[in-house]
Length: 162
Image 1 (tube, rainbow, N blue to C red):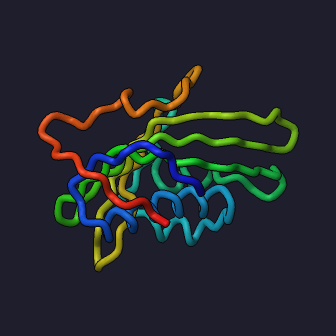
Image 2: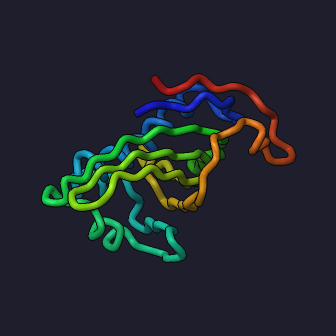
């Protein structure tokens, strides 16, 4: 997966930044490319929630929507990470997600979302607790100026995940 070019405003150690970005990318890779329900569930907290399209879904509801092989679902994702903050064993990441999607018997499509993900660390491992996804209708090119750090943030550039 590719990473966008905007500067990331954060108060976080570089190792945490890389592992959190990697987890966000893995979350999508396991769901859409590998389609491995057991591996996907292992990335989630026991009380995981997906907030999308005006709905609140549990892990079971989310997993039930996972594409299957018959759909011939293919997707390329690009992440533009904007904010990342760690406070003890809780972290949140805000990013834009741009996807090119191909699926059997449906026209190819391009979509963008603004997303925030809340992660919790337990037993030394980060897991996804909540994903909140907002579709961007008539998406325009992403701009660094479109988002600025929240009041009180001390900005610094964090290294990109490799």
